[in-house]
Length: 496
Figure 1: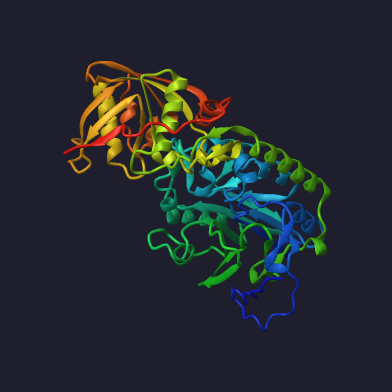
Figure 2: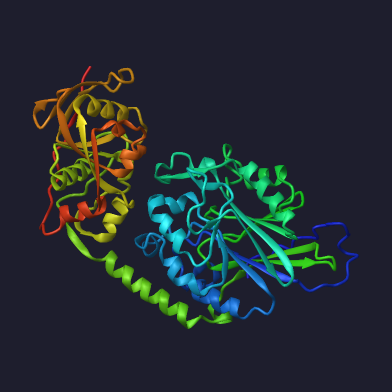
């Protein structure tokens, strides 16, 4: 096993050491930062013993003799192709056989935006529990709860979750989500759960890490919000389990990649008051716990399916195409050309931040496209006046990491000029842009919603969402070609 951290008595009204010997009343199990590694595998840290995975976790839980509650802390798909290609949906399918009581998502689970995540939340076998997340109208999304009160072994356990406003800052793909103040939300949740009789209050937290100087951390929350017994920390992405105590609150982290499961043994006195807690990081050795056959089959089938998607041939590139977040790039020109050709518009514009990886030379697979454009953004048609198009281009020049990648346009500009006065001249397909003329423009719905760092496109005359993903356009652009040449450059030319 990993190192065991025995958490001394919680000292709630009596002295540990004078208490009679007890057996734990119930166990609290938790996972976090699975990061797409949801199958058993040889683990070098444990002498290449086969460890981890949802199938071994299920078998481990089936062997428990004491009542327990199982929680999940989010960040469940970001690291592996199997996790990424399913957009995290693998968890709903494979973990449906596990008795999770509550889940959390983190900003890392918003890789594909709220549009994709909302379906996972709605269809989840366990509710997502977040006290500081609502829709913009103040209502809770389908499949989400502000808190959970679960009675196990005669003990009422209150559970709520928090995500970091700082961590969500700049996440343009939040869609209609609103992130509320962490401390105020925690205070309300703790008060409500205690009023409803919770004898233990557990927070599943995706707040800032201890080395994050700007975000509210778990430690700060524990100091400012009394009444939280246990904070299950998530979103750290660290292999080793951790545990500390702040006042009367224990902050525990189970480690990442599901080679182990965090366990809190909870002890109560005759008045059902929490008297002691012990933390252990239990390594999920397959040799010790076996493997649930049903979950193992689900996992194997899902991995076979995603491997087939990963290796599917799409096309070829003559040479690698590199992107640039803050300048024109060959990759950006290629993607914008693909968009304009498919949309049959005068102009196409993409923001650089959406293009996350280079396209390699040679054969391109479906997985390469997921790495290039991991978002579920849809192509949207706009009808724009020339002056509005010019304003949107200007706005893009002032946004870090969102440099406009263009097709159908040639721009002469001074990057050192004042805001709003950088662009000196624009031509559309060789003709000078006219402020009063009308142009057909293709962008993504993400850009229309402000994802380019500004809302300049919202002033268009007309909008039409095609519901076709940008990644599909890139695949169509590459398919059926022996090779795809590098696009021409110098669409943005600097001048004084």
